[in-house]
Amino acid sequence: MLQLTNKERTLLQDLQSHEEICIQKYNNYANQAKDPQLKQIFQNLAQKEQNHYNTISQILQGQVPNMAAGGQQGQTTTMYSNQNNPMANSMGSGKEESLCNDMLMTEKYVSSAYNTSIFEMTNAQVRQALQHIQQEEQQHGEELFNYMRSHGMYNVNG
Image (tube, rainbow, N blue to C red):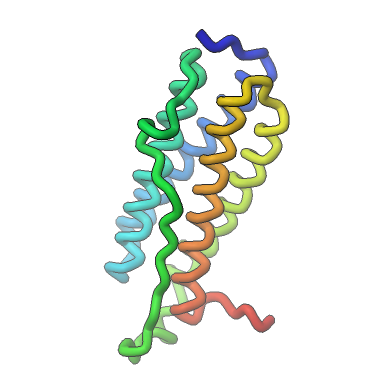
């Protein structure tokens, strides 16, 4: 059975709280999104955040997660194109842009929290599990970024 220090336990509980907020936000925003593509992105990311929450719960219960069998998936980057969508630029305004911006900022924050926690873990397998989750959080941000950029919500040219 995995023994956690008080600091590790506190950091993991914080990460679990972050994941819970991500799940709530993604589910809430999926219900608010008008674009079916964005709704699907939010629903998919909510499920991935649930997997992260479950992995952290497992660690907090003293179990070292098996990342191969733990439902964690590899890289899933989706590219978005609006060549055939004359409404693409008009979709980049209003409420959906705010939802996307909020979730991108949230993903940046959560990824940073994982970074700090990884340095504090004494068990190599727990560190590896958190690194895996952090990489997925970065992929979530990339997915949001790609959607936003393709819908005129994110200008990379400043």
